[in-house]
Amino acid sequence: MLVKRIIPCLDVDNGVVMKGKKFQGLNKIGDPIELAEHYNIQGADELVFLDIGASPFGRKTLFEIVNKVSKKVFIPLTVGGGIRTLENIQYALSNGADRISINTAAVIDPDLIKKSSDRFGSQCIVCAIDAQKDGNSWSVLINGGRKKTDIDAILWAEKVEKYGAGEILLTSWDADGTKKGYNLELTQAIAEAVNISVIASGGAGSLKDILDVLTIGKADAALIASLFHYKIYTIEDVKIYLKNYGVEVR
Amino acid sequence: MNIGIINYGMGNIQSVYNAFKYHKVEASVTKLEDIEKFDSLVLPGVGAFKDTAALLNPYKKNIKRFISSGKPFLGICVGLQYLYEMSFENGKWEGLGYFKGVVKKLPEVKLPQVGWNNLIVKGKTPILKNIPSASYVYYINSYAADKKNAFATSFYGTEFAAVVGKKNVFGTQFHPEKSGKIGLKILKNFIEVTKNCL
Image 1 (cartoon, rainbow over the protein chains, first blue to last red):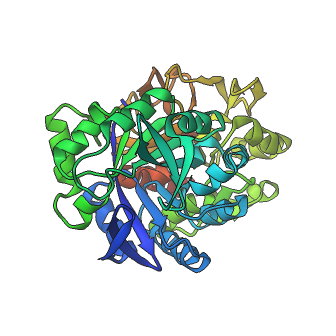
Image 2: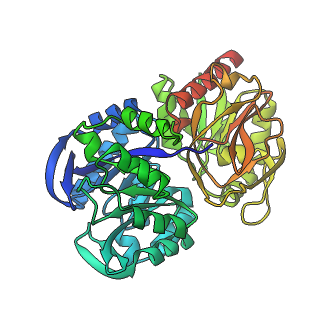
Image 3: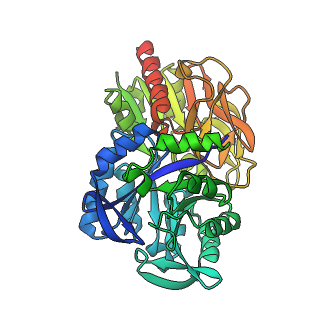
C-alpha cells in the first residue's frame, strides 16, 4: 500500500539552510548538502529545497547544490522558489531535480501550470499554495507570504489540479513557524477538495501534530523543518511514533 | 562494460546516470540511432505515454533488433509501459509489444500515485536478487500494466505490475533511481546481469 511520507524541508538562502517564523526572522541552520545526506540516512522519503532568497544568483546556487545532492542521495528531490518559466524548470530538472514547485508565478499566470505539466508531465509539477485565514475562508499569499491576494485557497487548489499539477504543497501562513500544530482545518478542506495528493506544511511542533495532519488533516505527506533542523526529533522518531498509532510509513 | 541510457527527449536521464555512477559504472547517454553498440540499455521514462511512443515508435526496429541480440534491456516507468502492446492513457497508443497486455489507468481516486509503496515479490528474476518482499519503492504514476506474469506487484486500487521480465528484457514501474538503497540494489543487479552477458 501507498504510505504517508515524511519530508524534510530545506529553505536555502545563498547556499545556507535557514529557518524562520512566519517567513521572517531567519536563523542559520547549516550546509544543505550535509543536511540532505543526513536526512536521507535518517529515512527521509523525499527532500524539498526552497530558495527563499529568490534572487537569480541564489537560485543558481541552489541548483548547484541540488546537482551535488542528486549524485549522493537517491530519493525524490523537489525544488522551488522563484521558478517562473519553462526554461527555469528545464534547468532545474537538468540539475537533478525530479519535481518543481511553483507558487507565485502560477498565481500570476495559471497557464504556466498547464504548459509545464504538458511539457514535463504532471508528476513533475508541484503547486505550492501559501494560505492565510481570511474571515471564514483562506486567501492565497504570494511573494513568499508578503503579498495577499483575493484568491480563495480552496478554489485555487481545485484550479491547479484541473490545470495539471501533480501535487499540492500547502503551507498555512498562520501556523508556519509557530510549532503549535498544522492547520488541520485548512489541510482537510484542501485535501477533500482535490484528487491529487497534498503535502502539509507549517506548524509542526510535536509528534502528535504530525500524526494529526496525516489522519485528521488527511494530508498524504508532512513537510517538516524546525523539528528536524533543531534536532528535537529524528525522522526515525517520527516514523516509530506514526507506526505505533497505526499510520503506515516506509 | 558499456551501459547506454536512451535519451529520447524525455525521462530523468541524469538520475539514472547518477545511480550507475554511484556503483562506479560510467553509463553513456545515447540517442536511439546509436543504441546497437551498447552492452545493455536503459529506457528511462517520465511523462505521458503518447509523447514517449511518438518519439520511440520510429525506432521500433532498432529497439527490437537490440532486444533480439540477447543483450539486457531495462525499461523504467513509462519505459516499462512502452514494452507493452498498448496504452489507454488519454486515448489508445501503440507500444513496442514485447510484453503481451495493455497499460490502463489505476482504479483509484487520487492520481497520480505519488510516493512509496511496497513490493509483493511473486517470483525469481535476476534484477530482484536479494530484494525482500515488502521492500518500499518510489512510484509516481497514474497508469500501470496488468499484474499477469509480473515478478513483483504493488497495490494501488488494484494489484499492478511492479517488476516484469522475459529473457533479457526487464521493466520496473517504480523509479529504482529514486528508491533509495533498494532501488540502487536493483540497478546493481542490472549491472550484474549486464556483466554476465558480456
